[in-house]
Length: 298
Image (cartoon, rainbow, N blue to C red):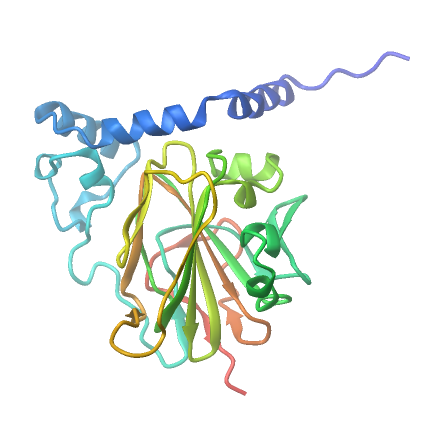
């Protein structure tokens, strides 16, 4: 019996996936990070102008509106927005979206399993660096994964008033996190480098995770600065005081971190604490500050 050949598109997809496994991710990412920090004057400004045109970046909403306003590509990439460009939803018991981007997936955590993309799941434990105690807090809870494309604003903000309890740096792969790869690389978000931030809120614990990717040269937080590079070879944990003057308290809508070249944000909420905005289905565009969901108050 003669086997039916696959369509050419299927072979091209397989080649594309294989290339992502074979690429020297760290070397490419380090090179991108170095290039993005160079001050090359008109060359840098020309690159920024081309990038903005290619990816339809709306510089009119940025605090600095001209390519020549930025000394490096990274300065442009983590550009601040004008005051009021992203109004924060300040309704009582309402959470706001942490980033501009697009919903990859959202919904309920099934026991300890989260949906990555159609046909692919990963577990809380693997995502949270095998911290079983932390993972138990979010069993059967709620999650939302937001993908930031190259055109998006790349600062990340707080969904709700919170106090920082713990931060974990997890070394890992640097696969691209675009929707195509999310559909084809198993355990993508649990394999990639990431920074896990655990917060205390009025409704209980909340997790916000910054996930690294190819060419994501670094991730930073407002309390610790740039986390990587340098890249540690093992998991690194920081614990923080949650009381007193040393406590790190952030308000809803306040900046908490940034990506130097794009990636993904994952938010986790405990069981029975949050009703997600039903409009936030896979593929929905997100704007930082708009409604993420409501705290369940009864």
